[in-house]
Length: 100
Image (cartoon, rainbow, N blue to C red; front, side, top):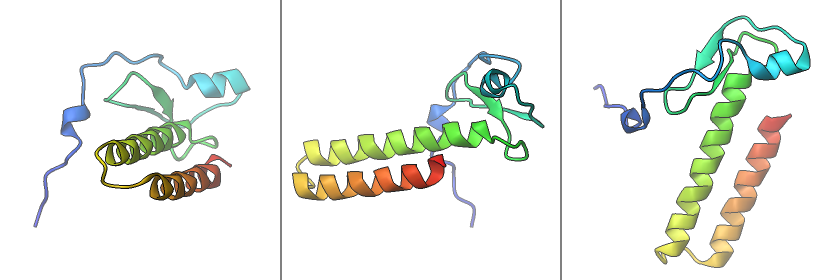
């Protein structure tokens, strides 16, 4: 059974920020292919590239969204401060694991 994508509302009419991977250029490195995010104008190198900047940017967006969701739950009174600290700690640990 096929399900509908819940992220379609994030797609915008964007113009690419560059026609290269700017992070790779700053490092003096190269890339295989480029990926453009349709929710913003970020362009990064693909998973086949040594640095995988597009995936790293996607993870940053994911961690930001998770943090915002936890704050919303706290503000709505659905979780208390202790639970929020534990969840934020887990998000921090995941972010550290993927940043290396």
